[in-house]
Length: 245
Ligand SMILES: [Zn+2]
Image (cartoon, rainbow, N blue to C red; front, side, top):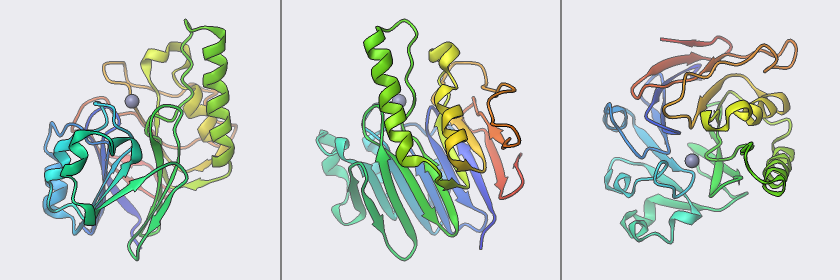
């Protein structure tokens, strides 16, 4: 069993997560590879899995279809209608709607709904339970109409009910600076209602590095947080420990 992963930040919600022995790599929402992290993972890992949560340009690039070393592409259903969808090899591509499951002897993938487009992912591999939210978040825009604010809250809370009590070794969740005072509302609620051991915040390009307030965690429930800002930033995460460089 593998107790350590290496994580590289690509951009926005893009990450490469690799085990410590070059056996597998999980690549999420890789629409840019500015520092060659995707390329490196493709060269070193035996199994390379791509995940794309939805079709937005800052999460998805059809150019990933060219990676012949990819073991499998897990793509949200909304990508299927794009012209670039035909570039993905049918035998190595799995299209996923919300609340779908797919598994083989190596990997198990479950999807949840998003509060924006597409899905979020719950990946089980090698004893690791990893959640990537995609654009699932409490999208509270303070200048919005009361109706829209209520809609955003309800959609988020409804989905959180399905995540209640889930256990994750590692979770990737938005802490978007554009939401101002509501930047961490979604991540905070998520950490309080799931049993998440370590948090990586994302989807905040161009904003100062997120750091949790004193009341972010429930009392006695503090967990390690990494909030990358620069493409190519890397951390090692060890179960039961924390993030290190
Ligand atoms: Zn997004």
